[in-house]
Image (cartoon, rainbow, N blue to C red; front, side):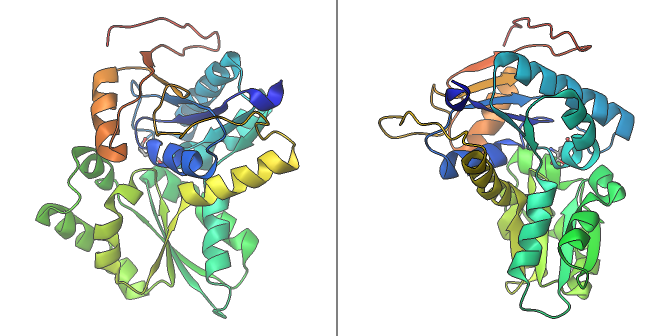
Length: 288
Ligand code: DGL
C-alpha cells in the first residue's frame, strides 16, 4: 500500500524541477507529487524562522495528500528547515545538502587535501550547512562558499549563454577561480541550468557536483533500504511531466508552466494552484 504511494517533492518555486528531473530519470517506476511555493519564492533571502514556517506548511500539505517519502528539493529549505520538518512529519525526509556534500567528498577522495567550492543562495551560505556536511564526510577538505543570488532570475529568464550572464558569473566566481577548487557543488536548484556558463568560468578541470542528481542516488538507496520502492511496474515509457505526476503551485501557475518548459522542455500535464497556510491546509483552486 505505502509502496505504491507517490514521492513528495517541494521547492520554493520552479527551480526544484531540476531535482524532479533527476529523480524521474533515476526512478522511472515511481510517481511524484511536486509543490512549488511560487507565492512565497524566493527563500534564499529570507530568515530561518520564515523558511522553517513555509517549509513545514509545504511538508504538511504534501503529507496530507498521501506520500511515502518527502524530498526537500530546495537547498535553502534543506539547509535551514530539515530538523523542524522531521519533527513535524512522520515520514522519511531527504534533503539535498547532505547528498551534495557527500558526493563532492566521494569524487575528490583521491586528493589528500581536496578543495571543495560551494555556490548557493545567501541563506544557504550563511547557514554553513554545506560546510558542515562536507566536514562530516572529510576532515581534510578545504571549503570555500560563495553566494550567487542573480543566478536564480537569470536561469528563470533562460539566459544560459548571454554575455551578461558570463560577466555576472565572472564577477561572482573570481574568488572561486583563485581558490582553484577540485570540485564545485551547485548548491541551488537553479544552478544546473547555468552549468555551461559556470563550467566555462571556473575552468573545464573543475568537477561540478549536481546536488539533485546526488540526492536521486541516495533516494533510490533509501527506498530499497526501507522496502518502499514501487512494486507495481509502470507500463510504457515514462515521460517528464506525464499525467502520472501531479504538480501544485501556490501562485502563478501559468508562469510556472512557462518556466517548466524552459527547464524541462515540457509542461506539467497536471498542474493546480492551491494555498497551503497556517498548519490546516486550505486547498483551494485558483484561476490559472
Ligand atoms: N530553491 C532555492 C534554493 O535551492 C532557490 C530559489 C530561492 O531562493 O527560493 O536554494
